[in-house]
Length: 267
Image 1: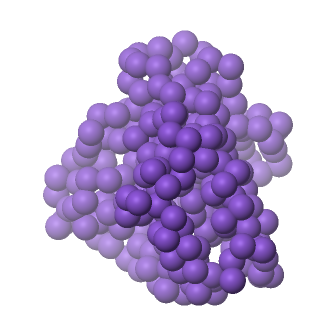
Image 2: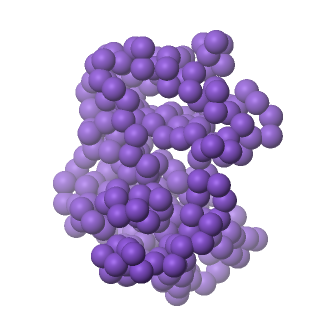
């Protein structure tokens, strides 16, 4: 495992400690206590436990650093220069239904730039990580994005929309338009962090999704960039919608995918 920097070591320890708890809970999924958080979104006892373990580890290493996490929100919110961005279980619905497609995602932000990050799939034991200027890795191997240049031949992955989304029609229009271009049916796996990680290692050629939160994508930003990919946040054409709209690709199909998703191309 090529983890050398102090920050990456802190993230690694937090991921490994939290993952032990997640693996145990995943094996006894029927015993989990589940409470509704919002339509189409659930939070489990395991989610909260994983978050608590991660936060304790991060604060032990850097008590004054800021934290942005899915469940608790912000900690040490006055420190915007040094901040951890956490998703304790990305793919919660998969986890709660016994689907082995979820991950722990932790990014470190310095002066509003993600410097390093880790996405850990505890079931497959796949650890994606990167630090700015040092390349991206999957376990012990350096990873690079795919070399696919044709969008029509690309494997594209996406997610959403939620039933409560005000952008459902627009998102379905995007899906149909891209489906009419690609030869391989669009994939959907339910974990934004792993989708970006899989673009970074060349399994997928591109990914887009609307209405994501920062913790869904923070770690993936640096991993994809260090693997040679591109990631962009697209401006929304509607007011009062939550979350970020992203396009993440191997770089070679990036502009073509953006052009299709841009406002002027959606009828």
